[in-house]
Length: 99
Image (tube, rainbow, N blue to C red; front, side):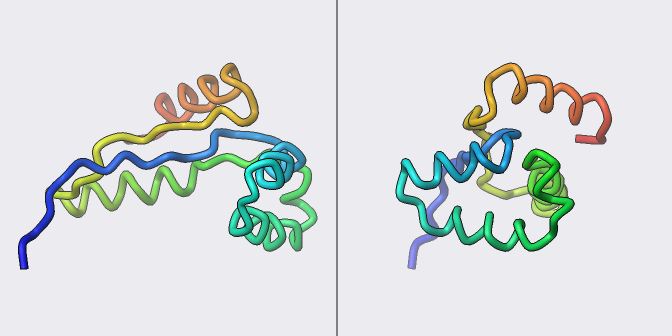
């Protein structure tokens, strides 16, 4: 068996309101996204706050630090909540974290 080595680019939704995430999930016909939103909706405090991929980004960064030979190459962000919101969010975590 040969090992396959190729770069992996991960696509993540940028920060967005819950309603926006639901709208895109319905438009795209993405069932798994709706299931994630349903789980999140169980915690009412989460309904008020916009979704952000912060925890997922932190987990990916930690994984890359531990696994130096990881094929994870780049993160790509889908600006579902708007380009300005996504870039503001990314600048905030870049300035406030040890990435």
